[in-house]
Each structure stands twice: as structure tokens, then as C-alpha cells.
Image (cartoon, rainbow, N blue to C red):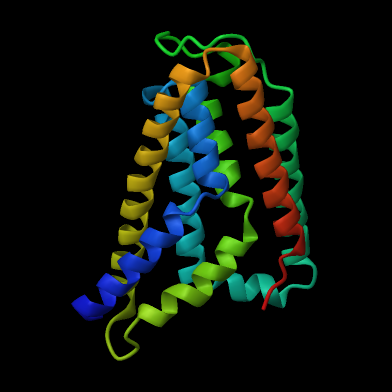
Length: 209
């Protein structure tokens, strides 16, 4: 892999990751609800899922999914159900004034729970698995050792993703100042819920190519 190829990959991933999606919306929502520092566990969950998907794609797991009848469909419906759950949960979320300066996490939202939530968001999108399987190989030089190239690409993807996590989390922290009013928070929850449901609809139409 040449330096030019690597820059093309980083540029593509930068645009891809920066586009609002389930992961970024989840990080934004967590930052709004609990502040930037306490959303780090959710970031770690999303990132762990992303790395898992990329490694699985590099190992050819997507080919196995496509070869097993019904495997993609089951995974797709599971992702749809989880996104719908998040949308409904956002609509029914508490709209009491935020207290971002609080030091302790709510009992129902411990760090492990935040991590699991972030991981579920990332892992429930089978389209990412298929995209990674089709996208990563385009930047691999087949004439050279492939494992080190995959390591560089996955690490680069993770670094860019982390950058955007911090940007969205910082944005959520700033938004929290304006969401201290229940009426504004209610509108934000409604919009977030609509976006999650929209992602679910798009995922429902996703088909392996």
C-alpha cells in the first residue's frame, strides 16, 4: 500500500464517518444526557463494535454470512428491531432539566450499560459488515503482505472514527446548555427518535449485493 493509497482511504473514511449515522447520533444523545466525559463508555462500545466488524470483514465473515441462507436477513431484522427500540425510547425519554455537572451516573446507566448500548448500536448494522468487506480490499495491494495492510487500515479507520466521536460528543455537550428546558429537550428527543426510526427503515430495505 502506497502513501497515496492510504491518504485516499483516510479521506474516504473521514467523509464516511463524519456523516450522521446511528453511532454518531447515539454519541450525541449520550453526551446531551450525561455530558461529554460520561459518554466515553458509549464511545468505547461503538468503537469496539466497529473494530469487530472491520476485523470480521477482513477475515471473510461477510462471505460466510452471504453463503448461509437467512443469516443476513436475521441480522438485518435484529438491527431494525434495535433501532426501532431506540427510536421509541427517545420519544418516551424523560424531559426533566439536565444536570450535566453531576458526578455520578444513574443506576440504570452504569458505564458497562453505556458500553453495551454503544456496542449494540454498532454491531446491529449488517450493512457496515458488507460495506467493509467491499471497501477495504480496494486499498489492499495483493502483491504485498496483506495482514499488515489490514492492520493499518483498521487502525486508521478507528482513529478517524474516534475523532468524529469527540466532535459529536463536544457538540452534544454544547447542546446540553440549550436543552435544559423540558420543551426544547422534548423536541430534541422527538427528532432523535425520528432519525433512529428512519435508519431502521433504511436498514429494512438493505439487501446484500
